[in-house]
Amino acid sequence: MEEEKLSSLKEYQKLCRLTAKKFDCPEKEILTWSLGIAGEAGDVAGCIKKTFAHDNNQKKGIRENIGDVLEYAAMICNFFNWNLQKILKENLEKLKKRYPQGFTIENAKRDKTKIDWNE
Image 1 (cartoon, rainbow, N blue to C red):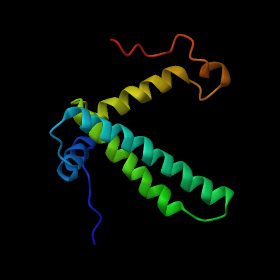
Image 2 (spheres, rainbow, N blue to C red):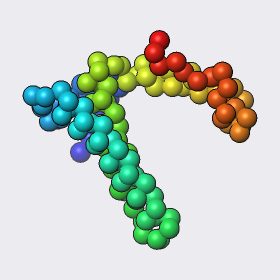
Image 3 (cartoon, rainbow, N blue to C red):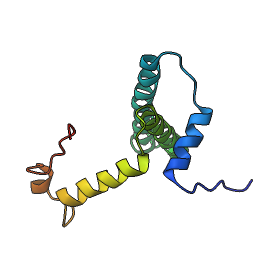
Image 4 (cartoon, one colour):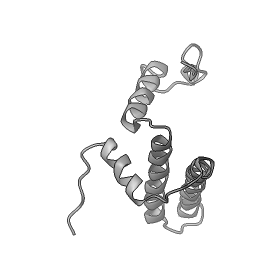
């Protein structure tokens, strides 16, 4: 089977919409996506723990659950009509501003680099 190519995160968001459950209630929809991302992130952590603390290789599970986290993230973006590509770009800009020479404990204190999400 040939690996499917995605040309953009916008296309990924669109494809996620095609396979996602449809909801009549917006509150149930956003709760599903937000609780889903939390659950899948917990699964990533659990697989990492099993791999490294219990010597039980769960790398395939880590990979699968990261994919699920990204699907839920895309659906949260879809819910709010946000562009995932733009969010990732904004995040990189924030990180470059916070850590211009790479990570340091001093820069991690976030003095004057915290994003005002009310803008």
